[in-house]
Image (cartoon, rainbow, N blue to C red):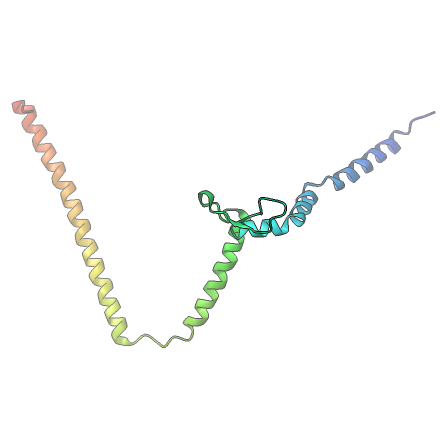
Length: 148
């Protein structure tokens, strides 16, 4: 009886494709997610499943800040953030225009703050510069007179 290599190869390939389709990682993940959808959703909301089979109460999961700290949690957090941003944008659209006196006060406050920060940074730089000068003077004196 002659073995038809092409036929065997085709059968092996068909069997492998069937097995891969049945064992697909994607299908397994989808199946797992669908079977545990309630538990996953509850955990993303920060709850632990009931501990005992007869218990139907979910508990808050606050162990080491794990609450919704997952990719799915990030997705939900982003969606919630988008909804809050849209609601605030809608509310801001109804705000009256800022009076000129308020704008003037804000600009004046901004300039005062910038001036204060520049002064503070210049003071910090001056102290650093003075420390460098003092160190050079001390090093010169120490080298000439052996002080220390």
